[in-house]
Amino acid sequence: MEDEVSRLLQRRCVWMTEQGQVPVAEGPMSKVFSTEALVRASQDMVELVGPDAMRSYFEPTAPQDGRFEHLMRFSLGTTIYAGTSEVQRSIIAQRGLGLPR
Image (cartoon, rainbow, N blue to C red; front, top):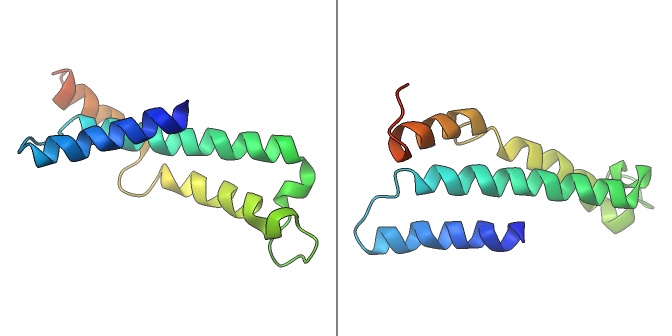
């Protein structure tokens, strides 16, 4: 479900841009939701696979060639670059809801 909602938010931003609108609150909404959904999904995968999921691709017997471990590291970084989730939430509150700083 989160993947579908994430894609819909991203498509809404693209549609708004094509219509000549600026997605001032929708862009940050898409970024926050998508990155945090990725973190939750990667944590779920690691929990499902167990301790072996944290084995690096340098280990020849790592499940899925170490992709689980890589996904976990990568997903945590997505909540930081291009503005942390907290900064994005602040932008949503200011621009989308009209709340003060």
